[in-house]
Image (cartoon, rainbow, N blue to C red):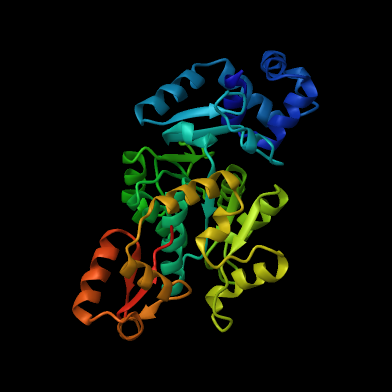
Length: 359
């Protein structure tokens, strides 16, 4: 019974305690029946919690709450709803009620979490865009916390490339945090994405970042961290992902950069989590690797394009290097590079460098 979990949430009973109660009494129906017989609950709940449940069940508060949600465009599902994702049910402390706006079907999609530092470097920004773009085009749903920095950049790049993204909020759906991402939240919904949280819309603002991070990890197939400092909150997401048996990926950063201390430490601790290009992640998931290979085969290159692609296969190269090594005159090369940019084969970077666009 969905109302069982909603009632317990309104009464301030934690998800963990709710699940324990259902397990001890045998079913959510048995728990619901016990609301009219408070003496049964005394061995499990405090008197304050029992009083609050009794108050709700003996009034129209539940109906008023549902009507209030409807008025502000928020829906909810509980852990007993068929749409509730199995992979989230399997974590240690799954949320029993999720509030949402948008495309709820995305909860059961194959997603990669991209999380990282709020105060990120130009290196972190650039690499986040490259990876988010490639993973989106490979077919992954991008999952993140819509925080400043890496999270927001990954989700914006996903939308820019026609992808779907899930934003797991630490606060309330009707009070988007951070406020600078209100436009991003609207864009996610306009593009058939999903906003979710487990915070009651009627509660005072309280931001459960660690609790939010467990949902991000639980929903994902794996967690990718492009950049994280020593105390980045994204490392909590990695800890949850490790506990849940999810894939963990980290991008190495400059050893003298404080912004990469967290990711470099992850690479030391988790053997095999180091990635240097999007294909390193895609290759861990056979269904997406096959799609990528099919797309790659479909791209036809002429002889001059093949020359340029071979010259930038390993790393970005300066324009002068391409003039020297390609054997093409500058006018022909300029026209070729412009055409290849338009086709999405290469990216022109700052300083007149060119690199292969991640597929």
